[in-house]
Length: 163
Image 1: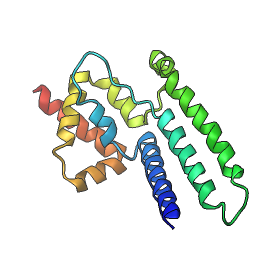
Image 2 (image 1 turned 90 degrees about the vertical axis):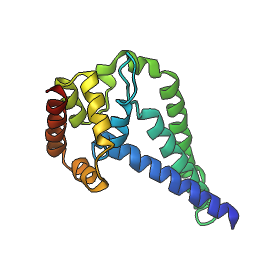
Image 3 (image 1 turned 90 degrees about the horizontal axis):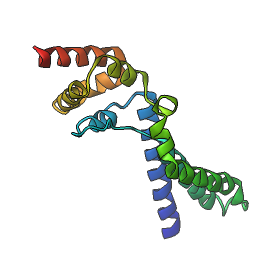
């Protein structure tokens, strides 16, 4: 029974992480990407979600395969693609410098971030990120669901910090 509980926990944790990464890439969760802009330094932070998505999907498939093994005696059905995705996640992590060198090809950013990068400097994006921390959770929820409202708010933050 404890093995089933452990597999259930692994399955739910990997599903939670996978859903979180998909929400970030789609643009419905802005906080983790804005948190990247809080860092000081010369290098522009890069969000590269491919290894995390592939690894969480492979762990999900492997846990699912072990969970359904007593019902369906074919664990290689989900474990085969899970192993392949784990190998792909390793190669995506090992060769991430290619993605950093060719940012224009590998950017998996949502549209709101590309539009924000067009007209703001790194310092202004840092200010937007720190102002994000002062918002209430309901306001963050509103801005997470509406890119237009978020970009309008970011414009107001930039204007307020410039003047």
